[in-house]
Length: 243
Image 1 (cartoon, rainbow, N blue to C red):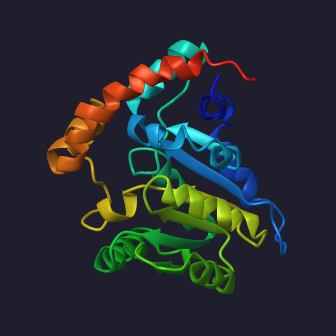
Image 2: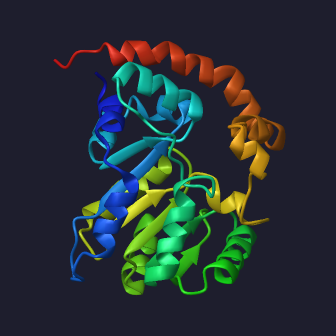
């Protein structure tokens, strides 16, 4: 089985992992956990980057179609888990508010990240946002320094696949105070207009993919081209044997 699929199959309950880090004793250095989320499109971008994938601690699928396919083929429940308000992002922000977690956000355009932070401040006032910046920076090292100076314990980065994964793994290698790094794709961009991007009925009927296709033309192109391609390569990867 491809390492990417094995990571998806073996990844632990995401909420339990967060709870463990929240109650972990504070110290100067942590073994940073990198958590990412893939849909059929981003799966195709990561599948040829095995060295990078090996450095990611947990991988979850954020598409209902791939979640159902994985559940069937792995003979175990693989839930859809995404860093957005229809899934894990809501849980994370609630815990960040309750426990005053030190969080650093990276992603979206300059004006968008400002709007998103204002929305977070209004809805989660006790969350300790120690820093944030847009995703169009030129130096990873400079961002790493700002994260370290802010003494962030959680980093949320939405830079697109595979850039966000590469950034997270580099940050992990610095062995600093950061407990967890979550990739979040377009979440910070989506939230710049309102906290809940998806209408409730869309979420309930699992039509998020259709809503995004109408809202963003590039998503429609991915659905027509890369999603069918994913279902083709999945079975090649599933029956792949190590060595």
